[in-house]
Length: 471
Image (cartoon, rainbow, N blue to C red):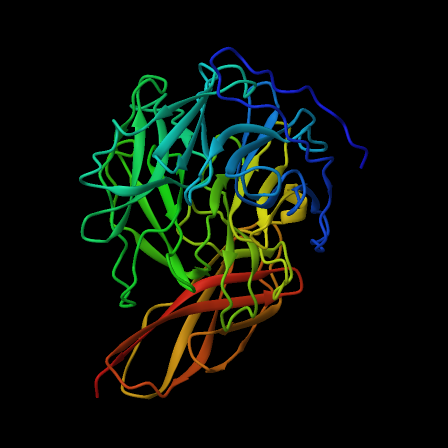
């Protein structure tokens, strides 16, 4: 791809923007991607003045420009770390020079951006050694000023505050239309890490904290709210999708009916087990929130071996997440971590993500490449007393617009599961199969796992639960 040098970011009077640090043109990523996906590296470890690049964020402005941010660390040219930016004016095909938004000791929190579509003002939350900082631009990211968020957060109540999700939202409709919502996490005096939202009803002039929400008790002993992404649903609620705080912990989902002030108790998504890394969620179509797309770094499970950057989709507003597409092959040496999705104004999608925690890659794709198929996979909770065999009844409903299958149905709930054959299912129809499941685990115990439907074209997931009572 031919390099295109875009205009330099102007440094306005009183701005904290600094001179550009050249990174060179974007180039093809080293790892293979599935057919229909195209990747290019925006920041390469050891080049452009920094040893590593982490924590991406991406936003599309009203004029169509894409702005990508990330943290450069371990500087090879000067001390400290920096919040960096690149711009694309052609939908992500080419990218301009790497420029500096802010310099200083960034302390464990990457950028997370909110765009006020009414005023065009950009807010980029990040964390420096002195605490949470808000970088503000009123000229499309060409100049920046910084504000402290110390007055928003009561440091006697919460510390180690960090922005999450890579991007907040502006509520489009309803009672709270125009409200800016930025997902956050913080540490409370009892040591717990909880999620909350920062909220502004005056175009970002003032921000306030919503009520915090704690992680569900999963019996692991290490439950904390991980980095979360927020999305507006069609019924006016907000969806908060949060990552786990430890390896192979499930993601959780909570909702808000008051514009992010309070949240329901988070529910675990047991088929979404992941590494403790930032993910993101977007709507697949403009104005629709039934079809959603999630990006996260999947942990290895019995259902899918290996860890990889994964896209998951839902057709029911997040109740189930059956579809899975791996952007990187399992056991990839360049294991991705944080990832940020974006739905482009001109159609198609992009995901800005880390490569092995050291470089930044942008991957573009469209709906045809994703090939989402709307399916509902359900199984009643299985119960038995003590070790032994049980029967899992699985119903697969085809809510898509073309035939599903034939294929195979199995589960990773235990090591001993006899798979079943799935017949071809026409749109609007369903099929029920039975799996033989054996467990040698004594009770009392509750196990969660995945139901996996495999066809020639798709690998789809549902949830399974086995309750073993004490004999």
